[in-house]
Amino acid sequence: MAGIGVKNADTMSINSNTIATNVNAAAVRAHPIGFIIGILAAVVGAVVAITSAIADNTSELEKNEKILNGLTSHYNELNNSVQSLQDSWTKLNDANKTLENLEKNTTEWKKAVVEVNE
Image (tube, rainbow, N blue to C red; front, top):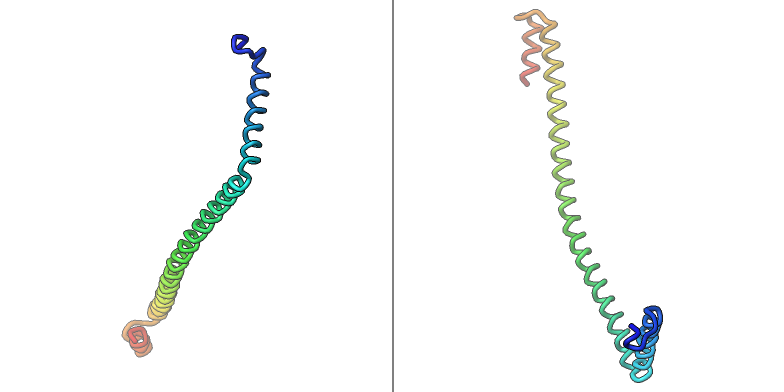
């Protein structure tokens, strides 16, 4: 690096950082309105991006909420059907136990059979 007038790499790094800072400062001094407009454009772009992401998430949330409501409704219907089936199974088991404890073809047995078939 000695051939280009730089004694060591550390000096080169400091000089390039200093030059970049000086160029940036000069640009801001020369066109402060442009710099401010650039910052405002970046802020507006960020706000638009965030607003768009929120809108997308809101529509997805509404769609998922509708799906969840439908699934909840189906679950409740299924739960009611299962409960009804369990009740019927319990009644059938109770009726079978009653019939098992009665002597076949007696009046009590015939009444129990009629009750089971209702």
